[in-house]
Length: 602
Image 1 (cartoon, rainbow, N blue to C red):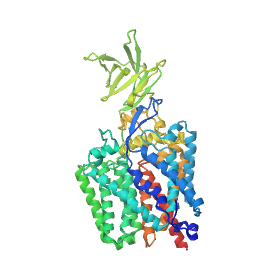
Image 2 (cartoon, rainbow, N blue to C red; image 1 turned 90 degrees about the vertical axis):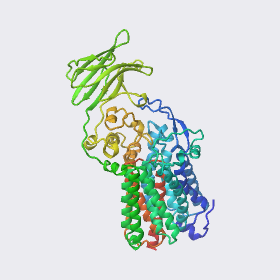
Image 3 (cartoon, helix red, strand yellow; image 1 turned 60 degrees about the horizontal axis):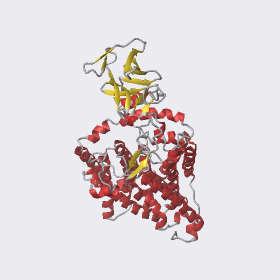
Image 4 (cartoon, rainbow, N blue to C red; image 1 turned 120 degrees about the vertical axis):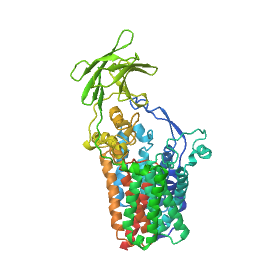
């Protein structure tokens, strides 16, 4: 490895250093290559010992595992590159105190992984996440490396050119999905993902998901990229460059609308408004471009909304519904000697014994201990409860994989058994994936969330059950990538009432809750300090800036992009598909700020 600039000035002043392509390549990989990685990966979940979770032992992944592997390799390369540049090329070590909170976050994450009761997953990643502690440490390494390397215009320009290549490939793929000719569903695309062929896709044709695992993460990608594209329009006077940046911006907005990420749409609007305010002088000077851009944004929204039967407006209207919710089925508890069901303020107690022929003998009582009558229905199989308080039916169940009984409540059948475990005659309920679990009292959260399970697209329930975990795992968390193992997936009634029937909750749909639960509240505070410190520093720098030159425009664009990411993180989780881009841009933003402040003081 070799840098171009060997002068003493260059070595003493990192903001003047010019680096070889080889040293910029890992940054290009994070921004432009890793997000595109998608490949079939069969694996063992190692969750068979957690029988209450109900996740199959053998699963497949397409979007996350190889991104994780690539990110870890790139992070290791960055470490060696930094050592080489400082010791081998005698470049001056440079540091920004705003990186300290992020370093603390990485350190706490490592300690959390070491002490976690489920450290295997913290070091190796877990089902549907693949974000182990090495990735979290990698985020810090990426941020520092980008800060160290990208402190001058030439290095930033070279990086941006390759970033545009990655964005262009992503846009081409996204447009094929928008117009219902998804490249990944073609024979060629399918063979690139999985040579065996025969793939099935979870998302409907016409919905954009790119290579990012879930349409929600399209919102992250677009929010991070579009402000930079908009800023680049004003960094060049070459017409075809401007047309290219404008085309990519419009295409990404179309892709965002087609992803149906409501939070993404709201966030990109907020981000662009903030950018408009910060760069007000630039936008006023180029008012024609500004007006055309706003018109295109509105037209794109209307067009995609019409193509999808008004789905964007309908989904946005329901995004923050605050109508109080009531649930007829209030609780189910599986106890040592009975199953109790609370329904519309009344309690029903099921007790079951087996006669000498292994037939079920049922006895039912209400909450006061009074017998509840029931009778055999005309079909000779199901029993009907002859009490208007409990409009249920129930029957014995004897099938290959399950011995017990089922109770049908409001058209849903719940299954229970005290026969499925050797030497254990207590009662269990059957959950997702044939998992046997105890149903117990759940710790309540904020009243608003308890009464609004469907708030923010059914996140209200998940947040309600996640908040109590912050207290339980306050100091060091449950361990990176272990949220699935500590979330109360045995709350079958809550899952049912919130619309998550037969689901296993693997993430909290909020990055801040995700961090707080997995690596502890102190680590969350450290991460927030890093975010807020960078935002305050950038706001002070850019609010009254004249935006002359290239770097200030890119710097403010990154500032706006990171704001959008932080807003979206309220309703979405950290993911190896998009988070590395954020931390690379944050590092670049720190480097640009460092350079601009140094120039202002000189």
